[in-house]
Structure formats: structure tokens, C-alpha cells
Amino acid sequence: MAARKKQVDKEIKEFLDEKVIQYNTPYFIELDTISIPHQYQLREDIEIMALLVATIAWGNRKSIIKSGHSLINLLGDCPYDYLMSNDHNQPLPFVHRTFNGEDLAFFLKGLKHIYSESTLEKTFAKHDVKNGLINFRDKMLGTQNGHRTKKHLSNPNANSACKRLNMFLRWMVRSNAKGVDFGLWSSIPPSALMVPLDVHTGNTARTLNLLIRKQNDWKALEELMNVLVAFDPNDPTKYDFALFGLGA
Image (cartoon, rainbow, N blue to C red; front, side, top):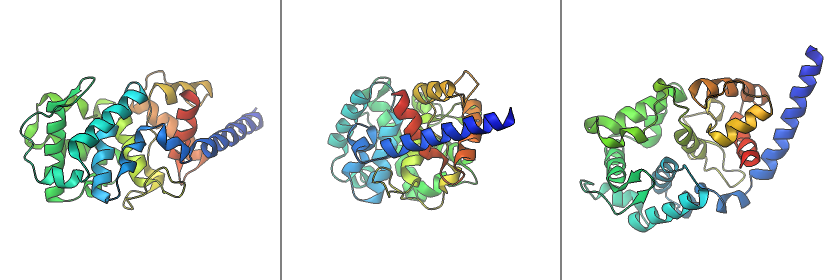
């Protein structure tokens, strides 16, 4: 029985490895929200646009990319310069589903505060990914705690899977060798990353018997990561390409 399970696990791993190769290619970029930060070259510009478009990444991908281009039109060729040279006290002409111009101003103000004190990378690089997510949330709330935008800042302590922030971290940390992710941050090892768990990846993982828990929450994410780390302890989130690609 144990030998049979080991063989099944090996076959699933080999299948997922093949799908990673299929989907982790530059062709993937134009069809994905990561295409928005790929419009930029400066590190800070990439970070800012990646975080913003990851934050609004729910719903139809075409709609997300369209809203991403609206962000480009608002923030211009140098988002970092725009960020640091404005006070962001007024809502901006932007709406993506429940994320509006007031929320965007909140995010810009919070990011300006972070960049004024340190870097975005150092804000996330706190012992492990979970603590990094919590620290980022605390920094963003800062003096704006209680604001309506609080709902757009995922909280792993509230058992959220933090899909969008984990996707952002994958973009920033994983190697750019394949031309998709950016590999800008070195203080967080790829081995510490967690996949962006959503409906698509969750359903695919359950179909492949990689995940039992029914809710797509932090506990389910930890359960799934235990399997993916066993498949590749150095780069477990590469399987996001396989799980998302198969699900979508």
C-alpha cells in the first residue's frame, strides 16, 4: 500500500513538473496580471505596480489587466516618483470592483510611509512569510487603522490564505530565469514562499488529492504546502504555474 502511494505521488509530481515547464514561460505573461509590472524597469516601480495589481487581482483576468492599465495611466512612467511626490489625501479616479479611488489613495499613502522609512522588501522579510504578511499589514494600517480599506489587507491571523499577497511575493522572490517572475528580492528564500491559493488552485489540488480541507484558507494553504515542499523543497511555489494553469 505504501509503495503504491509512493508511486502515485511520484506520478503526480512528474505530471506537475511537466505542467510547470509548459506554463512557466514568457508566453504566460501577456495573458496574466504580471504583465502590468513587466511594463517597468526600475525596481521600485516594479514593486509598486506589482503590489497594486496583485491587490486588485480577483475576478476575470481580462478585467484585472484592464484595471492594471488604468493604474499605469494614473501613475505614469515613474510610479515611485509619483508615490513620493504626492500626499495622497484625495481619492483617485479609479474603480475595480470593490476597490475604489479612496482605497488606492490609502495604499499609496501607506506605501509612501513604508518607502520613507525603509524598503518594501525589508517590510516583508520578517522571520517567515506569515510574519512578513502581518508586518506589512501593520505598516500599511499605521495611522490609518479602521479605514474602509482594511478589508483589502489580508490577515493570516484571521485564517485568510492571503492569495494576492502570496502571489506578489512569488513575483518578487522567484528567479527571473524563465522570464516570468522578477527575482528582485534576495532576503526571502524561494523555499519559504507559499502558493497563491484561490478557487482554481484549490480545486485542482483537491482533484489531484493534494488537498483535503474544503475551505481555501490559511490552514488549507499550510496543508497544501506540506505536499509541495515534499515535491520540491527549494522552490515549491513553482507548482503555482501548474495548479493555476490546469484550473484556469
